[in-house]
Every structure is written in structure tokens, then in C-alpha cells.
Amino acid sequence: MLKSLDPRVNRLAIPDDFEAPMAAKEQLDQFETYQSFTQTKEGKPFEHAGTVHAPNEEMAFLFAKEQFSRRGTFCYALCVVKTELILVSEFTDNGQDVYDTFKGNYSGDTSQSFEVFHLLKRGKNHKHIGTVEAKNFEDALLASKETYPRDKPVFNVWIAKSEDILMSDEEDADIWNTLKEKKYRDAMDYKAADRIKAFKAEQG
Amino acid sequence: MNQNAIKDLLYKMADDQLILGHRNSEWTGFGPLLEEDIAFSSMAQDKVGQSWQLYKILNELGESDPDTVAFMRNAEQFHNSQFVELPNGEYDFSLIRHFLFDTAELIRFQMLAESSFETLANLAKKIKGETKYHSMHANIWIKQLGSATEESISRLQDSLDKSMPYALGMFEVSEFEQELINEGLFAGEEALKAQWKSKVTEVISETSLILPDMESITPVYGGRYGKHTEHLQPLLTEMSEVFNVDPTADW
Image 1 (cartoon, rainbow over the protein chains, first blue to last red):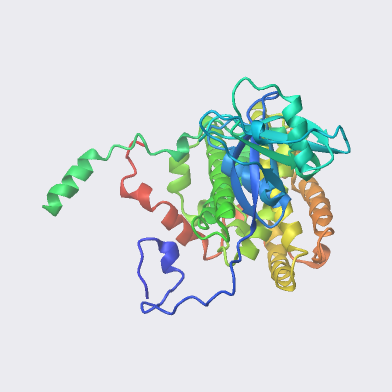
Image 2: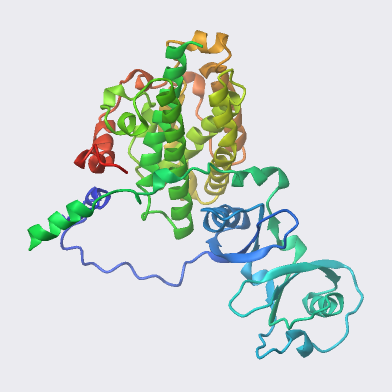
């Protein structure tokens, strides 16, 4: 039987000569991805936090809460949206504003609501800038170009339909109210230097 | 305040949390998908953290310090229900246990927020957010897998049927039940069970699962009085392995 220092592995009783290859898979069976955005304080803009895999948006929300709003990260609200439902603009660089590359005029149509996210610095996260109303994604980019004055160049824009976003309930904001005392997780004060020295000496 | 009554209540709650926290942590690195592995492990840590808070209250009431209480007792000195000590088995069982236990836990702490024992009422209010998320997590998983595929439904159903006698054992009454109720410390296991049944019924009714007839089930009692399955002692031995290398080490 395969021996491991982890008793949980030993309990699996894996044979020593476990060499059979895993069954071949027809195709990738990953769940779809969702993008998560967190708001650290009431009134502050939502900021992109990262990606989770999930079978649906409710579960994406569950996972995003634990991945991106735990461990000393203050959170007031969280939202998720399926990656394929986000329109991603071209990227620009060298101080060029991506909005300058959009040609055409906003239609003035207000039939649908869209959320706009800006990348203001390469390597940083997209930030929520506001909501615009337009007839489709491309129109929303133009609406956004008209709506938001820019003193600094925007390098990339994300647009998502407001209705495609799953937002945490305000009444559930207390799920981020966790016990502050987490010292039981640390072993920082564990004084083991003597024993490590003794062990090393013993090993020669 | 009746000291024996409140200590009995604190011990059974803390022991439930510690043992289930340890059991659930056994999934760390083995979870069905990475995101869930992280979420389930985090919740297991929350449970251990909550048990620590309860052991600290016991410590203030004159019991030994939390580490000693957690790591130095034998199985028959533990007051957890037998439900939480059962081995993890497959993920379907762990999810069903998570759902049945955390539903009860959320309601228990909501009830305790009204306790006449202020220290406990304050703690109950403090951890409301954690228990709310745990219950939300359980409900969404049960709703998802409880109506997804034939396999997921039959696996959950099987685990639900097997769990129910043990789940009902969580509500085994204490020998101090009447004192707890009379002094307004805790509204009692029967009141908790009634609320739990209605919440469990509500969630299950949104799935393709069938709730076993609880009236015809004999609950598995004994855990609250130190009677355990053969699974608890090996868990305790493993859990306290590092502690026992040097019980006097300063952490």
C-alpha cells in the first residue's frame, strides 16, 4: 500500500503499484468561469477581484465570497458575472486612451442598462465607473465615452449588462462580519529552534 | 445561573463544532473542485474558531484552558452528537451532514442571541455572519445537486436517509433541560428541533429529494452523555498528535 505522512492518504488504501493512467477524457470538463467584483466600503466603487469556476451564478457567488473576501480583506458587497457575458474592449498602451479608438456616435437609445469598468493602470484591477443606458454593447461603449470625462487615459473597458450581474443582498452584508480573532490559526509563537538544532545535530 | 446546566450546554456545542470542524478539514486538498475545497476548508476553520470561543467561556467559568479541554480528553468525555464524528465517506454524505448540522447551528445561535447569559448571547450575535454564510453555502449546494442529475439526486437521497437518525440525535435533551429553559438560558432542544424541521423541509421541498418521515425514525442518542461510535477515538488521537508531542509547548 502507498505510504504517506498524511494519514488521510493512507486511509485511501492506494496500491503501491498504482500506475494505471487516468481514463482519457473526451474533452475538457471544466465549469464555466465567472468574474467577481468586491466593494470594500459602502459607496466605494466595485473592483475586480478575480475569477472562479462554477456551474451557475449562485455557486459562483458562494465561491467568490470565500476566495476574495476573507482573510483581512474588508468587504461590504460582492457581485459576480459570467465571463462570456462581459464585452472586453481592445487594450491600449503608451498613454493612449482606448476611447479614442471607438468610432461613431451614441444612439441615445436607453432600452438597456450596462455596467462600465475601467482599467486605469496596467497590472491593476478594473474598477466600476458607472451605469449607462444604450441599445447594445457597442452603443454602451460610445455612451460611456460621452458620459465619463477622462483626465487620464483608460487602457481597457469592460461592459456587462446590469441584469446579468448577481449582486449580494444588502441584508446579507453581515456574512462579512466574522470573528476577528484568528490567532488559533497561527503557529508563529511556536518556539522550536532548540529542537530543530538538536535534530540537525543528530542528523550530522 | 445554574453553572452545571450552562457548562453542559457549552460543552456539547463546542464539542460538536470542534469535531465537525476537524472532520470537514479532512477534505482539505481532496475537495471536488478547487473553489469548493477552499470554501469548505474555510468553514471548517470557522467551526474550530467558534469552538475555541465556547471553550474560552468555559474556561472563564472555571474549566481547564481551551487546549487542554480540546486535546486532553478521551472519547467518553466528549459531549458531541454521534452525527459529527461519523467518517466523511463520499462528498454527498459530507454535504448532507453540513446541511443538516449547519441549519440547526444557525437556529441554535439565533435562539442563543436571546439568552439570559450575556456572554453567550454576545458571542451568538458576533458569529451570526459566519453561520449565515455556512447555511447559505449548504442550502445552495443541496438545491443544486438535489435536482441536478439522476446520480446526484440518488446519492444525496441515500445520504439523507442514512443521516436522519443521527441528525435527530443532535437534539438529545440535557439532564438540565428544564433549568436551561426556566432560567432563559436556552429555549431547549425541542423548540430548536421544531424550527429545524420546518427549515429542512422548506429547503428539501425545492429539490427532487424526499424527506424521510421523521416521526417513524428512532434517533441515535448517547453522544451528549459520552457514548460514542468507534470512530471518535481515532479522530481524537489524530487531532491531538502534534499537541501530544509536547503538551507544554508555548504556541
